Length: 496
Ligand code: HEM
Image (cartoon, rainbow, N blue to C red; front, top):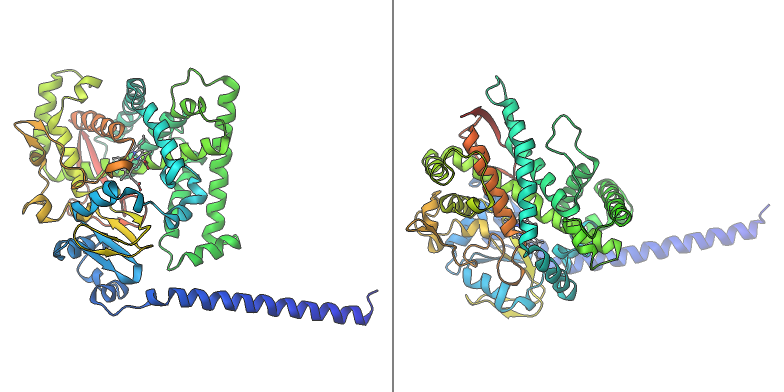
């Protein structure tokens, strides 16, 4: 039995520890509030409109309000004080950030912390030497003709065996409504998993339950994106420290992804990867660290999945609303393909009007609507805007597509012709159209993405008539890393 003097000393120790913890916590809270103080309030009109949600009276989406702000600004740049965010739609500034002063505008720690648990040290989430190494390695692989034709085979097989089969199964059926956005998400996840891992999650087979990998991946991207929307990073960091709420679910989803990814790596080692064509097997010939391999591949999945689904969804939405564009695509396909049913790799490259229609739809609806960097050292942008060290600087492709000074008075119209001269496709200055980013960190999957988008367009437009269930639907986006339409894109499908 404990003596009373022992109990008393234990009680005193307990009280002292409690007060020390309380003092330390109070000290940190006061410090955090002090540091956050200048950002909590600002009286300027823009910050007031942001804080009071006044923008939502005139605009459906926050990105539409930003587009309005950038259009109205003489420099095409604004600073949102309470967010510490300089937002620009000025192509000269974009070139400066992404090329001229690239080293001064890294992704930065805030971004990599938010996505760090999910993406680890993968290419999407790192700067400096680790990024250079992965980019060099990825470029070496992705530049090969062999991997492009491998990607084309996967996409073709997924379209013919699953996508067309799925649409045919509902075509002409009464009440046969499909959410095209959901279908494209499943399609692009199957494609990117097969390409990156050599693993087939079979998400497009609606009769099968969504694979655990796909569900965990979805949840992890959603919850990681939601971290960025918390009023302060402290909120999610505290939840993570106590393993509660959304952070608990995020941890579980990431654990599931890790188990599955490491299992695939183990299996590949067992059966040998030297003659496998997927990206993971190619990387395994150079890298042996399992966690690093997992990180590289997860970054590729994230980069290549929702972006493609988003691009396809807005393309089909615009095509359904612009029958004159659809007729011109049909005319081009008839000329190039004749009666032939399947498009070949070489023919895909000979479709300038289709390419223009796809570029044009991403001009108005870029899958990544904005992208932020963090300024390392005080700097001055070409338009004269001073940027203080540590400021977040965002370039905004969604707003840029709606700026008359960049695209002319018809910038809000869907007009593939603006990309064509005498029937030949001409790519615009990439800093005017940073949909795939531009400069040193330009998207590594651009060619593969275009191949995928064109292949789907050719196969579906030639076989089906796709009608919007709600043609007057106003596009509202859900918050997230990639543009996603809230409520999906319900369509009715008929055979041609
Ligand atoms: C329409 C489809 C796509 C669009 C619009 C797109 C756009 C982008 C953008 C804007 C970035 C820069 C993101 C950032 O640094 O924060 C990026 C990076 C990247 N993308 Fe894509 N992407 C698409 C498809 C793909 C596909 C299919 C792949 C994979 C095969 C891919 C692989 C990558 C990779 C690896 C990076 C990181 C590059 C780096 O940091 O150096 N992307 N993409």
